Image 1 (cartoon, rainbow, N blue to C red):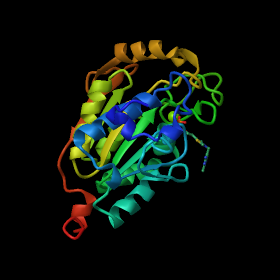
Image 2: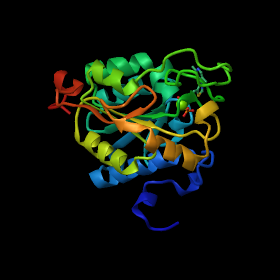
Image 3: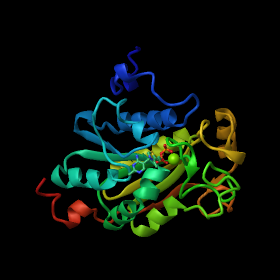
Length: 261
Ligand SMILES: Cc1ncc(C[n+]2csc(CCOP(=O)(O)OP(=O)(O)O)c2C)c(N)n1
Ligand SMILES: [Mg+2]
């Protein structure tokens, strides 16, 4: 194991990861760890909360920090409970599109409305990957999945757009082909209070079917080619960049907890 600063934040005994070869989760983990190092965040005062799914395995068991792995979809209310009781901790949630926008969608919406002081990172691989690639709230229309073999008849949700409209202080979307921008975005998010949401569109070389089933390198090129800045992306493109950045008082401040610690 080299002495690279990233390695100090990783549990050597948990490596190599259980992620499939070419999975985007390692790229997201790397960008987050680099942002945490640059932000100078104290890992001893950081808590990572996840639900269930492949993306939910990013912090636990890999990060050398406190982490909670809770019921599918329930990471946000658990994280909020921790933050309200221990406001001095940096509380972060990492999860998949199914976990955060599907079964946990209502928690996401209301945590954003409350401007709860949490950083939430959603890895959007378009499907419920861990359970076999079933259709979910972000699956593109017409994409075949094991549960929609003739193509998804539904419209996908623009999760970043919904969270911005619900009231979050900061919302951005990037892809695994935009790691430098993602890192900057996470740094910005780490410096703000209130609800911060960063969506990362990511490849799943194992479970995504149809036109999006590509070799990892091809998927990254596809993301690059089909990404446009927010406000300029067409229906078949990925809108990337900041959706919103504002500085409304977060929930802790509105509850009067900030001064009392
Ligand atoms: C209450 C409950 N319902 C369903 C499941 C089964 N389940 C486990 S992971 C998962 C989907 C995960 O999808 P996503 O959050 O997008 O993460 P990914 O695996 O794609 O990274 C589901 C439905 C469960 N564990 N618990
Ligand atoms: Mg998913």
